[in-house]
Amino acid sequence: MSRKPAHARRLRDRRQASPAGCAVSVLVSAVLTVALLAVLVAVLRPDALSAPAVAQAVTPAAPDTPDTPPTDALAPTPQPGAVIRSSQSVNVRSGPGVGFDAVAAAAPGTPVTITGQDESGGWYSVRLPDGRQGWVAAELLALDGAPASDAPPPTADVTPTPEPAVCDPDELRAWWGIAVPAYYQMMFTLDQLGQGFDVDDYQRLFDAARAAYRAFDDASPPACVAPARAELLRGFDETLAAVRDAANNNAPSAASRASAARSAMATGLAALAAEQGLTPSATGCGAEFWNTGIAADVDRVFAIVGSVNISTSAAADLRSTVFELQRIRRYMGKLAAPDCVRLANQSLLSGVDSYIAMYQAAATGDRAAAASAEAAAAGQINTFRVEMRKLGL
Image (cartoon, rainbow, N blue to C red; front, side, top):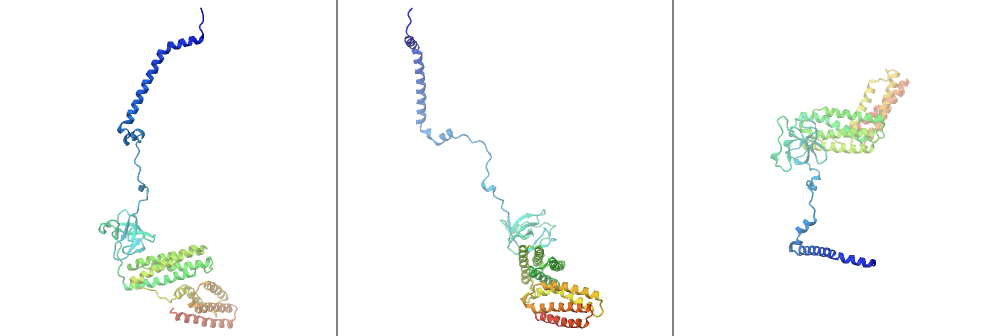
């Protein structure tokens, strides 16, 4: 049996498989042709390029998400405003009730910011344009966006802030007699800041100012001066704080508080002048402040001289008197004095020096020297008094 070449066998096998292979090729070609025709028909349809169809074809469905709040929702909630509704200035108090001290006065029409309300609804916590805060009776406020008549009325158990009353003249005069010296003492205190005092000096200065503060605070004020009194007290508080800062070597803070003190007291005095016609007497140079500030020490010197007799007192008592007078003289020598009282101040200090010399001489038994010093002191103190009278003090 003869063997056919290998290529002949392959050719034979290919011929035998050709009918099936051709059938498959025809079927694949038909399928591809139909698919191509379908795509052409879809592309050439008039509505195939419409926006909804394209969007539906390429845009996936958005997942369900909660609504995003608008940007404005992230902004701070604005605080409501109001204006003072009254024919006269009203009290701004430290708490919700007339039993609390007045910390400021607000003129009619003053805009304020509402920061809170008490549980009764009769008082609003407000912030004034200058940043101070306090409480005002609801009936004295007209809220923004509402007619004045819509302001919430105070409840029955809350007494609204009263309108300023007309003062009894005698009551007003008695109160003013306490207010003026206290104001003078505070101004004297402010004038002394930065004089090179030591801690003991500042303590003396502080004690004198605090005594004046207490006398003023304890005095029963007429109702008509309440707003002005609140401003004066604020100035007094700042004065005491300024002395503390100066004693602690905090000069910038002391200066800032001193400025605030002068401003508050000026505001209080302006209100008293406008509303009650009250104006403290003034020399125009600050002599009244200095005179008030040294009054306690001057009185102490005269009390010592009047009680310790150089002829009958024991030497030990005389030496003790010398130490006391030297302590007063040292302090008074550091005090700042306005130019208009320069001669009066020099005469006063010289008089105290002569008294010291008088007691020193008496303690050693030198009666002639003691008598000479006593005469010198009398003349110098007389000059001091004459100069003060010239200034009306």
